[in-house]
Length: 118
Image 1: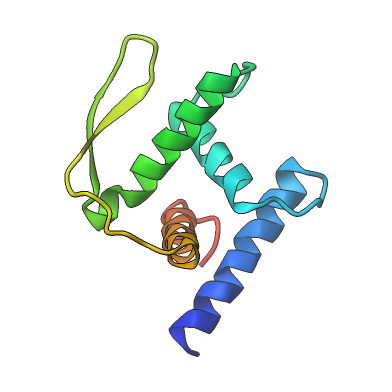
Image 2: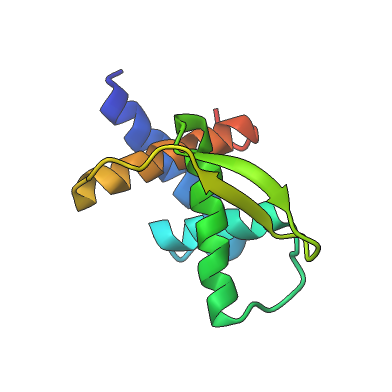
């Protein structure tokens, strides 16, 4: 199976699992999945987040997802429990489609590591 087809199949599997668990089967988009990963990484599940906190959750997720690629490095967790990352390497300029593929690859790897998918 080609790498692109494998990524597509795994991505669809992630979307289906998360959509069924968190959106009553309504298909979640990339941003919603990134948000869910941010909540998971923060570990504060039973609270309502303000708009700016939601953006910070997405930032946490992106940093965590791109850490294995060498773009970010975990620095510390603050007293409120929020993780902080530092930039190790600036992301190269990517077209929108390339950004989407990179994030989907990172998300699929995340859920493989979490043993949600194979």
